[in-house]
Length: 422
Ligand SMILES: *[C@@H]1O[C@H](CO)[C@@H](O)[C@H](O)[C@H]1NC(C)=O
Ligand SMILES: *[C@@H]1O[C@H](CO)[C@@H](O)[C@H](O)[C@H]1NC(C)=O
Ligand SMILES: *[C@@H]1O[C@H](CO)[C@@H](O)[C@H](O)[C@H]1NC(C)=O
Ligand SMILES: *[C@@H]1O[C@H](CO)[C@@H](O)[C@H](O)[C@H]1NC(C)=O
Ligand SMILES: *[C@@H]1O[C@H](CO)[C@@H](O)[C@H](O)[C@H]1NC(C)=O
Ligand SMILES: *[C@@H]1O[C@H](CO)[C@@H](O)[C@H](O)[C@H]1NC(C)=O
Ligand SMILES: CC(=O)N[C@H]1CO[C@H](CO)[C@@H](O)[C@@H]1O
Image (cartoon, rainbow, N blue to C red; front, side, top):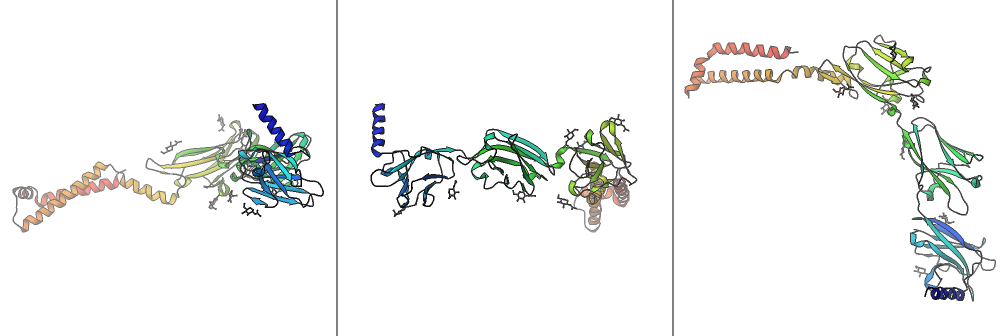
């Protein structure tokens, strides 16, 4: 059964006289994108109709002809000077893969060229090289390639979409230098290197190294670059108490021990103000044995709270940096934390002292005041009007003006205690 079908097919093909004049044309396209299928023809056929068909090229298999050059997702263009007609198939789906024929209509048998369309996903790659760096640094990305591509165009682009990589290339081997990007091609080792200067966190992400091929889709390798925020190299939090001495310790890599050491203060490391070591309260001390230097503050002040940065290179380029968040405690009352302006925290602290006296004591005062107020009111009322109840009369009789004096003393004592409580 199968062989009969096969035979019928062969006969069918033979009857249609399909011939492969220039062998099979292999074309690769990206899923979701478009592909150009170009077929050449011999001299003399310039004015003939050209077409692209699928399967066994019956009438219903013709996808597009030069007589009607745009249909659905197919476009055809006949370049009569170079004698090449090109069919563009857009919005490629996996079902579009397979065998096609380029045809030239003529009396008798048409001329056919076989085309094999292969589809690949528009993403790359299974293996990704990871590269880590820091803000402000320069980083080189190495892209190896096979020796047969020594003289091919090399390029790098962002993202991981091969189909658009070349047109969005950041730099190619033709330009070599473009702003912060430089491309060096070492043909001997078969590696091209892309160097990116003055890295920002914006440079983090995926990159594709591309090598152009003329007869097929380009070759790619994927790189993932992570640019770390400069501050996050090391971060510590320190609590100090106002009035007491404090030492801030800054570690540095041993190889940087001869660099100048600095400490600065400010929310952002790019515009923090350098600590004036000449200030009497501060002293800077290096400790080479522990690869660190220390900033000693004799008596901590509320103003000292904030963010500090220290390192061993004022160019902010190399070495390890430390971010220190210093909070200053005002003797068991309130904290001056970094990120807030000290000027507004101090009054807070003062209020805190007044309002955090034991609640019980305050409550007692309030009760006494209320009680006394009511007593006085009751006294006033009863002196002008006839007492309505026995109890109110008793209260009046038992207390009177003498009690009022005693109460006043109590209240005053109470308020005094409240205000002078520490
Ligand atoms: C197909 O050819 C057209 C015309 O030359 C060109 O603009 C387009 O970029 C080509 N598409 C692809 C995927 O090569
Ligand atoms: C070309 O194709 C379009 C859309 O399929 C159709 O409307 C039009 O009639 C065709 N033109 C000719 C000359 O066949
Ligand atoms: C970061 O990249 C975005 C878009 O990718 C851009 O709009 C923004 O300006 C860039 N920021 C810097 C600081 O380069
Ligand atoms: C500093 O004080 C805060 C608030 O009291 C506390 O949460 C934190 O654990 C303290 N940190 C250190 C390093 O003592
Ligand atoms: C410091 O730099 C940051 C951004 O890095 C900016 O938001 C801030 O306003 C700057 N501060 C001053 C005082 O220039
Ligand atoms: C330097 O650091 C080492 C190790 O932490 C310590 O033993 C030594 O006392 C420090 N020296 C000074 C002068 O602080
Ligand atoms: C960013 C940076 O330079 N980090 C260095 C911090 O210090 C250690 C050694 O102490 C180095 O190995 C890191 O490279």
